[in-house]
Amino acid sequence: MSDTTRGGFTIYRLDTRKAVFARTDSESGTPPDAAVLHPSGFVTSRSDPGDYRLEFFDSNGARTGELAGWRVVPGDFERVTAVDGDEIAVSSGSAVGVASTRERAMRWDTGMSKHSLELLDDRYAAVESDDYAQGRTGTWTVFDAQTGDQQGQATIGYGQRYLGFDGTRLLFDGDPTANHRPNVPILSAYDAETGRQSWRLPAPTDTAQWQVTGPYLLLIDYTADFISRSVTRYAP
Image 1 (cartoon, rainbow, N blue to C red):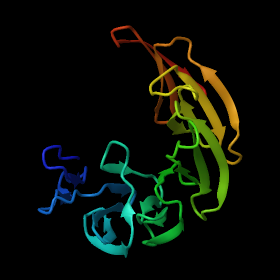
Image 2: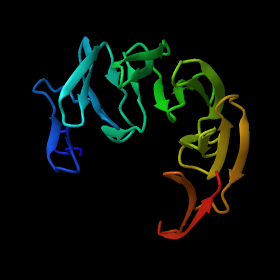
Image 3: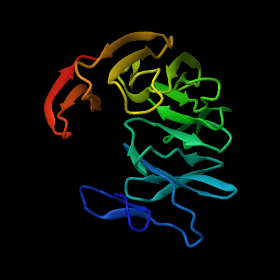
């Protein structure tokens, strides 16, 4: 649970309702990093200048180890995220990679600095480029999450936004040629192993929005007052 007043977070066990970990902003003003919950515990870190360090804990909050030189890659909106498997996305400041929560060691890393790493599932990870200086396109490079071997590489437009992953394809919504987000609700799928576009599907209306909820792909249509008037489930 995030603390919006002090900038930190607290992790609780659901069965005992007891807090097993808490972190707030330090007196120096250095904000706490994100934490990743996994099936047997959690991992967190703090990015003090010159001292990146992952810390591993079991489900009771007991510290089980550390890994120097790396930090948890924070989520887009939440400091605390969850994964189903053994892999977590990490960054050193000059590289990104995948660490194992079971072995408490790095699986692999790539020197693609100034990029973000997204774990798609326990099989694939993707590195997103954020440099649009050469045109209004970006690049998503997919890697094998276990070995770091490169898979497909997809080129997307500036108007597209990553929406989710269905096990074989990366889903993006938006018009590739648009210069802002949100825009026309187009849904595009790119194959993880080849990087090629599999299909593109426009929404029936300009007021609809694509949404991934768990294993489901939904299209939610809104009124002019942004009130939901219909929800349609699509096959992936």
